[in-house]
Length: 148
Image (cartoon, rainbow, N blue to C red; front, side, top):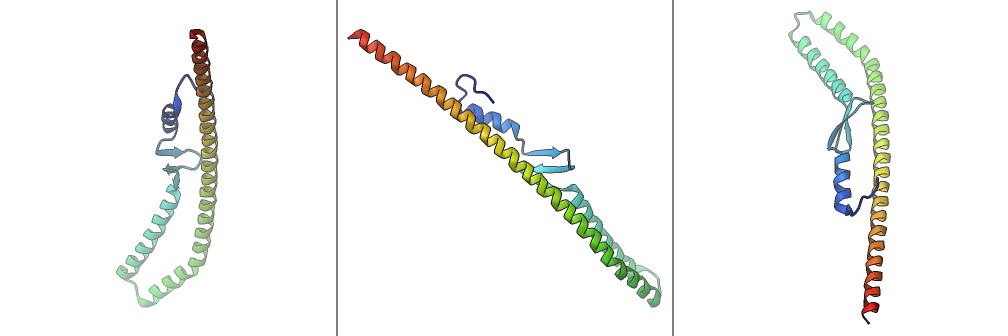
């Protein structure tokens, strides 16, 4: 980022705001980033799928015209499948947590770089203004000496 004649802090702030929209798509992960937080579509889908499975199973058991023996057998099979489902869910959640951590680290790094750029622009602007003021003071001093 370079400073062009007298942009000052206001010009830099406007440029910075244009670079960071409030909501953007992260193409690497298929997640939305809302004000710096990743909102995973995958996590929402998995949560909805599990909730639907639980509700569907409960309604199916209550409405199904089965004998008690068949229902107990079905419940046993479902109970035996729970550890595998829990393991799959744990793995999925761990993967999602790792992706969110990577996204957060990348976001932090990007923000740090932009902040360093903004500081550099501010320093350059300050130096430029300081040189202008020194030149104006030198011209004023030269004019004062010429008048005397």
